[in-house]
Amino acid sequence: MSSRTQTPLELFGADALVGEEERDLQAAVRAFVDDRIRPEIGRWWEDGQLPARDLAKELGSLGVLGMHLEGYGCAGTSATAYGLACLELEAGDSGLRSLVSVQGSLAMFAIHRFGSDEQKEEWLPRMAAGEAIGCFGLTEADHGSNPAGMRTRAKRDGDDWVLDGSKMWITNGPIADVAVVWAQTDEKIRGFVVPTDTPGFTANEVHHKASLRASVTGELVLESVRLPSSAVLPEVAGLRGPLSCLDEARFGIVFGALGAARDSLDTALAYAADRIVFDRPLSSFQLTQAKLADMTLELGKGLLLALHLGRLKDEGELRAEQVSLGKLNSVREAIAIARECRTILGGNGISLEYSPIRHAANLESVLTYEGTSEVHQLSIGRALTGHSAFA
Image (cartoon, rainbow, N blue to C red):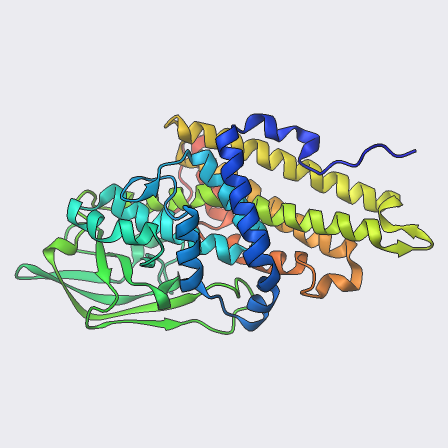
């Protein structure tokens, strides 16, 4: 005799940990994903394209671009609400959440936290509305996990700065209206707000990706890009600037990756209920139930950790090593869940008609960007031992 079926997260009673306003925001984003993204995402992913400009305006109208920032047209929500929105966006596709994360938690956050009043007023309202798209130029082809080794340089020339170098794997790069670019100077690393129509700035789209295919990725090339002194982010110097932005984006991934896991698990549950094997539903077999139970346990534990980190962030107490705990756990478990769900679907699991194979492929990128798993292990190890093993 079977009892009432429950969704994986219902078993954890997680809704009781979320306020009504946060639930309403989450529901609005989920409805947007269901109506706008799900019908198209398989085709977009297969074709390797995303109508990012159109979606940015729709996401701006929804209020999720820079939603956790205050003023300048931003919604000013809690960090937890932003995290839950990321969860719903990534349940649609990691590329969609990446679009929102890079816009709000990297480009907008950098300007909001470290920019001048003029920079904020010029860019943030348009970016919040999705009318201007931003990107974040930190990673270089030979300097991913070691941003301190970047080769992009900015030199003074009178009252101006001249930038030379390149950045790689830059989400939104080829469609961006503004780039926040980090460069070595004679003193410290500095950030620059670079309109992408500045002479000498080009962005080349990266093709032939087997992951994050529904995302616009590019290489930024800066050849004698001349900028006025007002282009410098005035409130920060050194690696603290870009690393604090990365922590902001990683927080969204803590929640977002769980969205990909939840969607994979929901798909596997629905498939197992309908698939008849040896005259019985696939979901009635012990091994299938064991897989579903184990995945539910890891998904629920991940959400409980994410919600706890969200509350710490809302209270201003979240530390970088705690973000590493969340990013490492969420992505590691999400990719394992997506792969296991693929096995429940059998041969159909490799079809883009079903989401787990797409989520698994996307999560290969999420596993690497905003700090590899190894970087987060070392961050946690440093907190535990007091010794840095990065060099």
